[in-house]
Length: 88
Ligand SMILES: [Zn+2]
Image 1 (cartoon, helix red, strand yellow):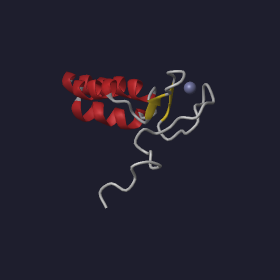
Image 2 (cartoon, rainbow, N blue to C red; image 1 turned 30 degrees about the horizontal axis):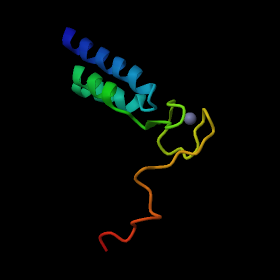
Image 3 (cartoon, rainbow, N blue to C red; image 1 turned 90 degrees about the vertical axis):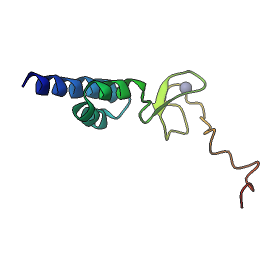
Image 4 (cartoon, rainbow, N blue to C red; image 1 turned 135 degrees about the horizontal axis):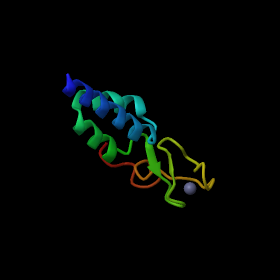
């Protein structure tokens, strides 16, 4: 019984960590399923956040303009102006 409570607590802790990264619900289930490992995953997961290259604040991964410094954020893997004809 104690183990179940411990596992549930792991889910709550993982959810608290994950909620700061915008994925609290997913992290909660990770914690429930994986226990302490779910917490570790929540800690090391970047979630759906990314770091603004200009002000180093955490912003949504789909954001093209930083909500903190209002500067444009370029996706490093979406550069298709150059070298776009590779592999066809
Ligand atoms: Zn910024």
